[in-house]
Length: 122
Image (cartoon, rainbow, N blue to C red; front, side, top):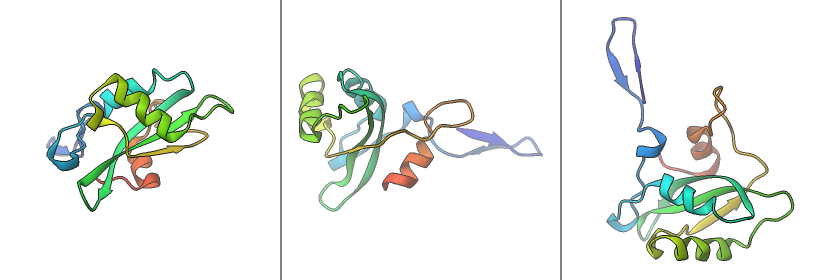
């Protein structure tokens, strides 16, 4: 993502959501891949995956999920569900349930706000 200034220069701001990386223990994990797997769970209607600081691995995976009303899955169950869909090392170490995720003016998930609210790295 970037912006042009008044002189026409392009300024880099941050990676686009689907191009972001989480790097736990040197592995490259794309949040979009985990989000796709998590959304296959019948009790999850919306999700944002971010990297959070971790003493052992440098960065850990955190999934912030909006559950189907009154039907939040157990966090461990959700992590195991993901592990069965994609590589086991990509499962989230942390799962948080919220009523809603913040949105941008375009109606997309505001990843910067999610990171700010839930301890993600910039």
